[in-house]
Length: 374
Image (cartoon, rainbow, N blue to C red; front, side):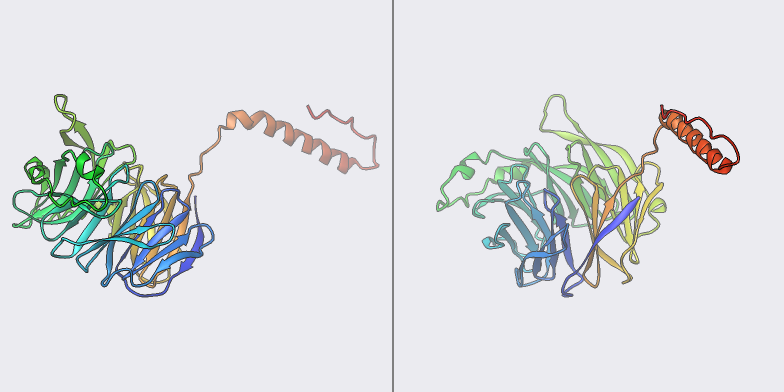
């Protein structure tokens, strides 16, 4: 059972954007074009907004795990850090030479990672936006998605090489304690280039299987990878001799045939469901069997541009090309054990039959003795 509990119409500005729930699940961050809106997911009210947050469209939004800060990545070749309470810009991250594709926070909210078409991943200090480290890999041309391991010691990225082949890379992060403890006015631009040698290719995909995004499950044990025609679920296997090293063990692959709805395709944060969105309709399927669990309506415009799950996987937000946002509550009906309720049901039916018999007798005969309720 599902329920569409809220409709929000935002100013139509651009079909490009990004949407993400806040860690508490109460608010929703929506980026449309260069603008950012904070929407209350219960009342639908726009709590805060920042018009013209970037000089060009925003491609990605990341909210710090502690909920105190937000980062945006834009086509204007910059990423920016924002205070969530006021939406004041705290820092502009300069350094990338081309469009910034993605941005993510470390689990402790202290480090920000950005990836772009200029083939490198940059790490920044979240407190003030100072550069910390540059991560490189041989033959990497573009970085389209990044995510920190929940332990914070590794960073994974979806990258493309110069031949157009995509894959997932892993870096073991260097010790950044000195840079993190440096004063806010101290120069920390002496980035640790030694981290470049730590890059390791975990898995490759053929050219036709373009990798779009990667993300960890909340417990950090699984990694989801979205490609052009499949959704992959991997278990992170650590090396017994080196805990920092790991490999990917395939757990589940959802092929295009089971995602024939096409359009947007994502795993839920708990990795139990696959979501497909197309032509105004969103379908939620069981990740293992492909069984349809929910069909979500609410959009009249043919085309959904964004979807976002709450961290507990109970709420799903969808946005169409007219900037209409629907927030759905996903609730599974759990069948009750009929054996527990059978005695009570039978007793109730018997009492109703006795009442009916007394009513039918009326004054024609003596009344039936009143039966006890127990």
